[in-house]
Image 1 (cartoon, rainbow, N blue to C red):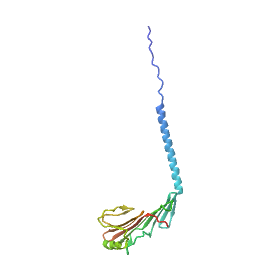
Image 2 (image 1 turned 120 degrees about the horizontal axis):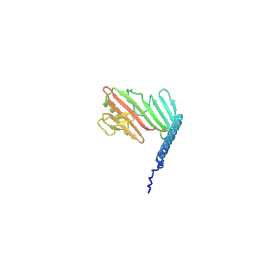
Image 3 (image 1 turned 30 degrees about the vertical axis):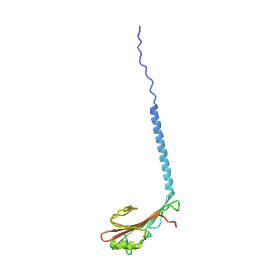
Image 4 (image 1 turned 60 degrees about the horizontal axis):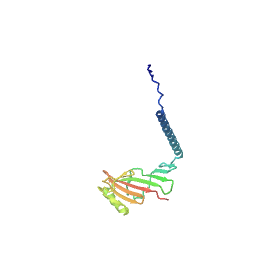
Length: 194
């Protein structure tokens, strides 16, 4: 009786499905990233070609885009708030206006800062007599609405007159420095249609 010894047969190679599936997924992800990157670059190029920067004199600039217009200017700016007599400007007053594509969606920020050698109580009394009753006075030490509003910090030691009406806020902030009283006048809100 002869016993037959079986020799091991080489097995067929295992299918490479999992490896090729990974390469397909990587290829699809890379293609998606490439398409998104190219699309973003084309959109950025389109908007960059549509942006127009215009110098509006020595004191301003206007940036026009398909989404709207941004105007920034310095110099004599009108806040609509009374300016303390004899106070001198400490910073160039400025306005930033964001105008959308619709005439009714404009937004404007106008800020002016002044200083006077007069005392804080004297300046406070002057504004108390001249501002309309719609302005709420917050005395030093009152922390009702003391905060930072568009770059103007209202501290707890300041005297603030604040008027909130519709979509607008106006404020006068009085702060004492060593020898002077600083006056910040600001109006923030929707642009009035002319």
